[in-house]
Length: 150
Image 1 (cartoon, helix red, strand yellow):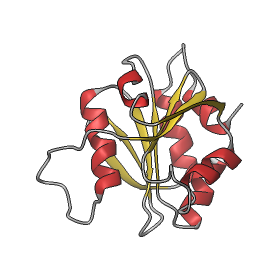
Image 2 (tube, one colour):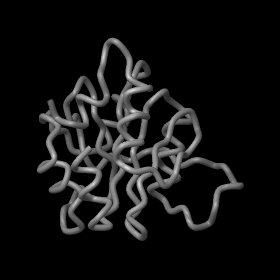
Image 3 (cartoon, rainbow, N blue to C red):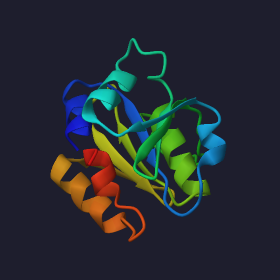
Image 4 (cartoon, rainbow, N blue to C red):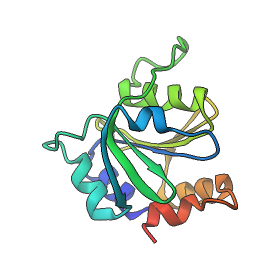
């Protein structure tokens, strides 16, 4: 959660996709494979604007960062606000096709959002993010533990 808070405060855009039951392997193939432990430092480094991986999504599988700089499908919903950019549209698009949870940090405003099942929950704080992730966790995979990097 601390990494997401830091990215938000610094207005550094981020898109993190957390695999649940439907595999994200096809999307991992579009990025740079890492298979690294989830950590605040690594997430901050990946999404730093000068990083070659910062524009794509990070995909977390089995409590590991599987890949970064991944391309995700864009939603085709036309009723979305024009203020939502590609990062938000990609996050929503992935959740329309899979059961993944996405965390999005707006580069323009620093706003934290989550996406699940094609819906976007905007303007949440770290406490609410933890609650949402805990609620969406499964017995097989604890999302909250993954984001904390433990």
